[in-house]
Image (tube, rainbow, N blue to C red):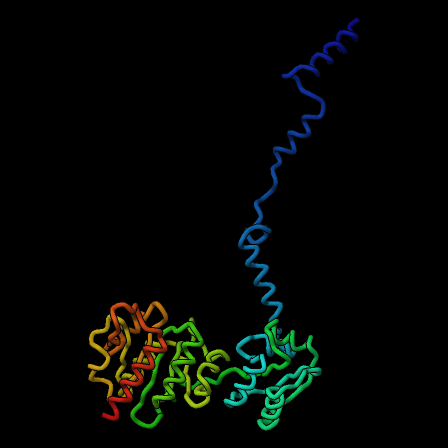
Length: 320
């Protein structure tokens, strides 16, 4: 009887709401254990830090390691080192752009442009190689190449002090953070047209002499030296010590451009960045800040247009 009573009691306890049920103890212990330490942000698949880490690893994998010879794709993967398309390649060769190698599709349908491209490349002593379409697709990184691609070496910049060695009077145009390579190319073209000694650009956070800038310059980049400054303000100070006046262009300038008394001597014309204008430190370094009078309905001038007007006024002052 006693044994039966215990079994009946056990049955009642198992079915009651407050009593312990079979197997619940193990589940409770696992819940108390937790999930362990929180993973680092870069180890969480959906965190932006993890995505940034993956991108960095992919970029590092693309770069050639030390001691490993670069392949043709490594040398030409940057858009600034490659000109593609029949019209662009032909224009570059006609303008005398420095180049190292011409790649031509081995089954290309030659027209007058292709014939002239190959002829100019041979005349200029370039290596001409016939390649497959797959090779051209790879080195052009998906850009429409039309069967031709021209490899060009990195632009060779002058030293900032080299610009002072030009025949007097020295005329330098300095670009304070211009971002658009087309604006840079247009300013270089205007500087060459109005007899400037050279152009100065910042080493960082600004457009460089890429293929795009070279093309817009219409060949002027091969005649006009372009220098890069590690520190724009310090370089401008060096130019002032060498006897140059520094003239900044801004919409709220102290005087109108044509009224400036500094245009007929050694001069550095500083053009500000698109939209932002002259940086504070550069502006403080200028001997004078001038503005170009424009109609009230026009908000501002494009940087390359403003540079062209200033270069023209400076050249006119010399001949007056």
